[in-house]
Length: 176
Length: 294
Image 1 (cartoon, each protein chain N blue to C red):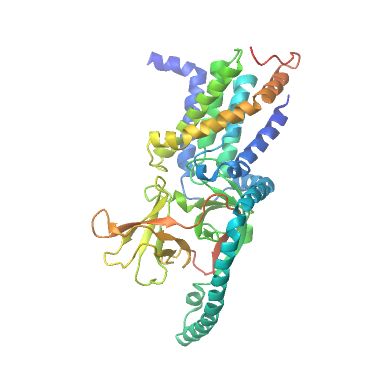
Image 2 (image 1 turned 180 degrees about the vertical axis):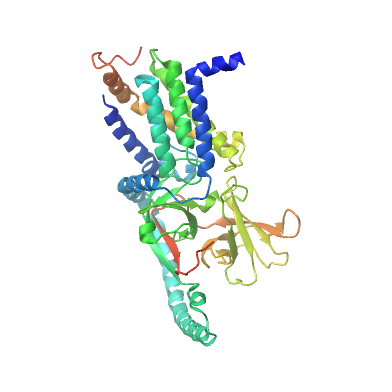
C-alpha cells in the first residue's frame, strides 16, 4: 500500500498551506482566504480509499495542525477533519464517484468544516462575529480556494489512489 | 429505554458519541493555562524546522515582484530617510548627555539593581516560519524557543511596532499570538496598558479588544480629562509589567468619546504594524529579575 507515500504528500501539503500560500494570497484578502489543503486530501481519501483511512488521516493531520499552531484550543481541526472524512466516506462508499459529484461533495464538506470551526470557536467565546458575517468574510472565499485546489489535483490524485486501492484495475476515464 | 438499548447496539453511533465526548473534554482541557508537554514540543520543533525552508524563500520571490513595483517611490523615501538620519544624529548627542545624567542621578538616589534594570531590553531577532491557516487562531510561528531564552508573554515587535505576544514556547520554536486577536470577552486574552508618546505621565488607556470589522483597536478606560488628540502615537506604558515600556502600538484615530458608563472614555486606535507577510520580528526580552512577570 502507498499509505506511507500518501502521508508524505499530505505532510508536504500541510507545510505548504502554512508557508507558501500566505505569500500568494493578495494582501487585501489576507485573513479572508484560508487554505485547508490537507482537508481536501482527507476528502479524496474518503472518496477513493475508504472511510476508515480517511478517519485516521483526518484525526492525524487535524491533530498535527492543532498542535503546530496551538494558540488556545486543542482538537478542533482533529475533530472536524476526522468527523467529516468519516461521514463523507460513509455516504459515498461503494459508489462510483464522478468528477462533478466529487467536487460538489468537496464544496459541501468545506462549508461544513468552516461551520464546525466557527461553531466551536463561538461556543468557547473566541469569536463574537455573527454567522452571516463569517460566511461573507471568509467561508465563501476560502471554499473557492479549496475548490480550485481540489480541481487542480483531481486527476493525479484520483489516478494515484485508484491504482493504490485496486492495483489490478486500470485507471478509468474521467468523464463517466 | 429499549430504544436507548437499540441505540447502544449500534456500534458506529456509540463510538461516534464517545469520540464527541472525548473531543469536548480535550477542548476544555486545552483551555487551561499550561506549559506544552514533551510530545507537543517535539512535533512543534520538527515541523518548524521543515517549515523554515519554505516560508522565507517564498517571501523572497514574492518580495522581488513587489520591489520592482516600488522602485519609483524609492527616491522620495531616500530623501525622507536622510532628514530623519540628520535629526537622529542631533538627538543622539542630546540622548548621551541625558543618559549620563540619569545614570548619575539613579546612583545618587540609591536605586536598587531591579529598578535600574527595569527598562533594559534585549531585542532577539527571530524569523517567522509559518502562519496558521485558521481564521480564528491566527498564530505565527517563530524559530526561537526556550533554548534561546524565550518565555511566555514576551512582547514581539516588528520594525513598525508591536505585533504580538508569545503564547506557547517549545525548545526551538514558539507560537506568537498577534495582537489582532485581542478580545476582552475571550477566556484567555490579555490587555495592554498604553499611554501617549510625549505625555507618558498624563495620558492613560487600556487596549483590550481588536475590532475585526473596522480593523482598529478599541482603547478604553481613558480618564475623563485626558488631553489625547487625534494623531497621537500610542505606546505601551509598561505599567502592567508584562509588556516593556515604549513599544509603538498605533495612532489615535478618533477623539475619545464617552464610554459605557460615562465615567471613562473610549477611542479607536489604528495599528501601525503590518500583521501580514512578516519575515523578521524581534522578541523583546526584559532584564532578568528574580521574580517572574505575572
